[in-house]
Amino acid sequence: PFDVLVVGGGPAGAASAIYAARKGIRVGVAAERFGGQVLDTMGIENFISVPYTEGPKLAAQLESHVNDNGVDIMNLQRAEKLIPARVPGGLHEVKLANGASLKAKTIILSTGARWRQMGVPGEDQYRNKGVAYCPHCDGPLFKGKRVAVIGGGNSGVEAAIDLAGLVAHVTLIEYDSDLRADAVLQRKLASLPNVKIITSALTTEVRGDGEKVSGLVYKDRNSGEHHDVALEGIFVQIGLVPNTEWLKDAIALTPRGEIEIDARGETSQPGIFAAGDATTVPYKQIVVAMGAGSTAALSAFDYLIRLPAE
Ligand code: FAD
Image 1 (cartoon, rainbow, N blue to C red):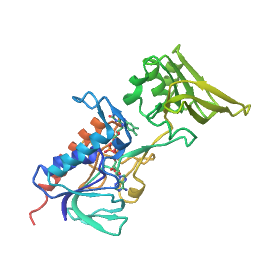
Image 2: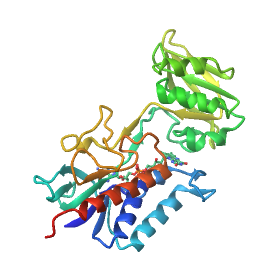
Image 3: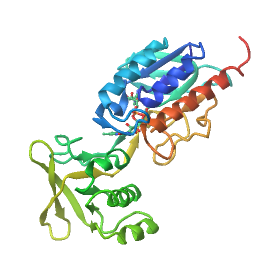
Image 4: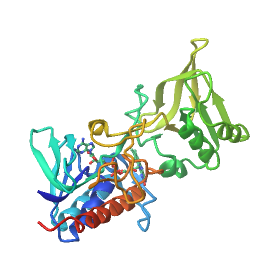
């Protein structure tokens, strides 16, 4: 069995694997797609000490750094079931889609999350070419330009307030007749001069010039009429969904599906830790996920050294 089995090969999983392997113990990583969300990212400008890199390059560097530390990488392996140890200090089991089963003294869950998409024409074509999901990451790219934020929940309204300080103009588009964000955020949003709020609106299309976004089309749900908005960027904020469906019966999740962890990264099951976007960690960012992965690995090691000698 592994001493530490990491499930998920994004920034959190890579950091966990490297920190654990440097303790001289047996570490494996099973990942559906090594690199994770980083593979879908173009420019990265907030990976501290590296002013600019690109997702595929960072993903390749993560993989080679993990490899250099003697970690057993099982790429293209999807975990389908987690069976926590039945006795304290026993082995946990992870069942893979290919039928194999992996056993480990500790597990670190780092299966990340995915942004919910609008599913409208043009969204795929213009992803990273004006269609964005992360204001902390891509906001500064739209300095002085016009953007829309899709979604009037807390994350959409927070994004609109954040972007209003950077860009020329923000149009917030909400499907419902009212915004769902906290009142204090709505008051702040309403006080900003360069924000327009459109409710009862369904985004139906992302428009572009072949190279990048040039606008969007929405349908007024009251009148049924379609309207064009000319702009350079669209931030989609209709939900970040944790990849934790397979963990429902094994460990405690929040109603939104995030893995509940404590400050040391431990889940509701002793010996099972978690890190990154799949968890309750407040901010979903590469450096945050890496820090959390390191914490989870050190906590797993701390757990291992307290197990009775075999
Ligand atoms: P992920 O990167 O989501 O990795 C999850 C891993 O788990 C993957 O290997 C996946 O294949 C695997 N996995 C999932 N389910 C299973 C399963 N059942 N079995 C096995 N493996 C599984 N952050 C920044 O800091 N700066 C940026 O500029 C930036 N830009 C972004 C741009 C885009 C388009 C997106 C989508 C995100 C961006 N982010 C950025 C956010 C950042 O990518 C995430 O916060 C970070 O990747 C989270 O790391 P993670 O390891 O927790 O999860």
